[in-house]
Length: 248
Image (tube, one colour):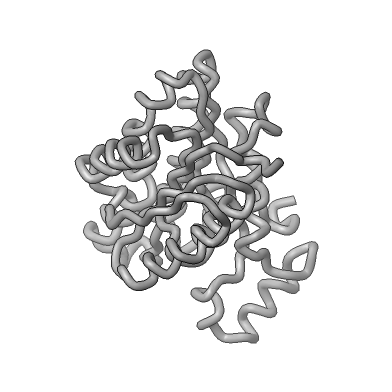
């Protein structure tokens, strides 16, 4: 039996990169997938078709998780369309990197809204359905940068560190109702975004990692699969790095 058979997962920001990798892995393991996207209807439709080929139900929703009202509507729509919400993956995120002296208030606010406020919005939005079912798994995507910080990324680091504190609090709040909340902190993951970078720079990053390679979206997806499934029924409030040993 597939380990997510019969479960419905919401994945925010799933049209590319890590989010897409998670959606593909979950669909292959039997989960019905509701995913959000912000811009490309075409990409969303292609992903819907790709996921549906696994024999599961998949639907994309144009929704900004950083907007409270849109998050509430999304949860209501998914509940109406799928009948249940078992797993939430808060994956939507952006970077607007700069040194503190150059970060504008607008860039600070946007990163906090998309990366951190979205986690509050979506967790609050699905909470009622999970409380009613007396079960659920919430997986929040942080970063090794949220664990250790990084020069030139104070806005991103603050948003990702905030996710860790929020998630530990939710694990304590909702644990008695069998709702688990964990954090995944990816390191250097190679996606289409990193593909546009200078190869020499990328190789120097790989060389600094104990496993001597960048991670793949599948590496992150496999951990999410474990945390979403009943295999991790006694795990909550944890931060797990997927970083090839970077923070060891």
